[in-house]
Length: 396
Image (cartoon, rainbow, N blue to C red; front, top):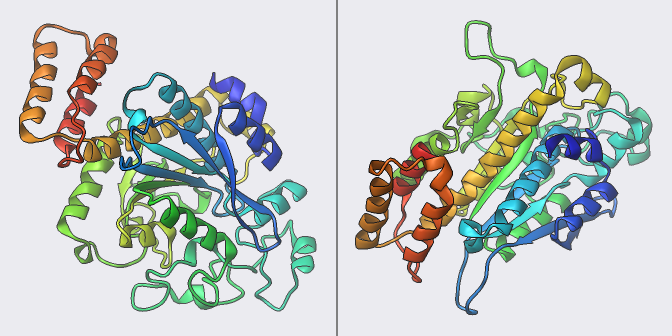
């Protein structure tokens, strides 16, 4: 399946190919904003839930990529995740209790420019900020232009102040945070989607660059699963329950130790104020960032580089892992929102223990187990069930 995806999409699919791909999967397309240059910012919805009444509230998850226009490997991870979640929705189960949204190209202007030049020269949006014009920026690419606004520094939380970053105030820096929070149409589009759809949780796919390789005596260069804070804000500024959720969910989504996990400072060794993830956390959206490792060790890879520096088999395995991580996040959110009261919780866990003690091979009887648990679910919004999810993650 995954080799056919890569053959179909390539390493940097254009917006039209992405649009065809998403709609072939049965996703509903909606324009949710316009970029600085007036291009459509598109969202796709995977309709998985079967709403029983207008009063029924289901959790909504948002998956995003290409916040930075030179990171198509993060885009591919999102597209693989879309495929996995769409196939899971066809089988029913947990995804019937969630609404899933995708914004594959947030920074559509920069990505379009990079596609034109065939390399990842533009990170920021195309607003002229450094004594230049947008046309100058076009001709300046393929050199990495120091111009524009970094979409992931343009949110209100730690946009400025003691936990921000002085470099983001430099209008000629590729980390420039803009003239004020939400100054950019791209960040406003993300904001409006989150508020309109009452997003519960989010995952943003980025891709790492080679300069962030860890020292030789530390952990190997590998993907990252990052939770707030991205800024230098200390974790004790977060509620203890939120801290516990992020730590527990990070472990649940990383059972094979595929990722390095933690805050930005703990994983990638730098901090960034004004990020989308930290703003989401401030409005009670549980948010994570996945930093993909490109097979060519650069943010922008072409097919030749992938052949030279990384086998397709390894790339497929990694992309599948990113997709499964997205699926695990959906499961965690659904279990917290569609949990159970103490009596029902005991019944569910007892069912799991009976199946295990009876010698059931969990991999083979998983669907029967899930079906049985679905019949035990209750209709009301109930208490969190992280312990149940952790138990299931161990035995999957």
